[in-house]
Amino acid sequence: MVLLEFNITPVGVGESVGQYVARAVDVIDRSGLNYQLHAMGTTVEGELDQVLAVLRSSIEELAKDCPRLSVSARIDYRANHSGMLAAKPAAIEKRLGRKLKK
Image (cartoon, rainbow, N blue to C red):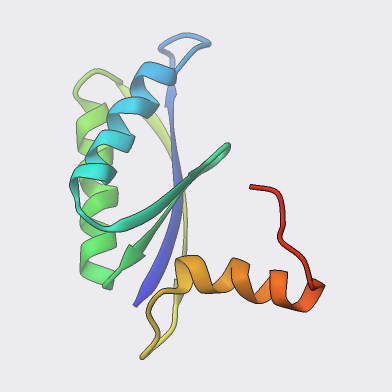
C-alpha cells in the first residue's frame, strides 16, 4: 500500500482556484479510495496503480479548463501495510499521550 500526498494548482486562471480544487476532490472522492483532504493538499491511500490513476484523472479533469497546472506529489510506499492514513496520526497521538487537533 502507498500514501500519495498531492496538490494541483492551476496557473493563470485567477487568484481564487477553489472551483478547480473542488473538481479534483470530486475525482478523488469518486475513486472509492480512502483519503484525507487538508489545507494544502490531499492524501490518498491505496495500491500504487490506484493512487497514480487518481492523480492522473485529477490532472486530466483540471486540464480541460486550465492551460497550465503546477503539481506536487509525494509517495510513501510501505509493503504489507494498510490503514496508514489513520495509523500514522494515531501513532503520534499515542506517543504524545493525547489527541491532536484536526
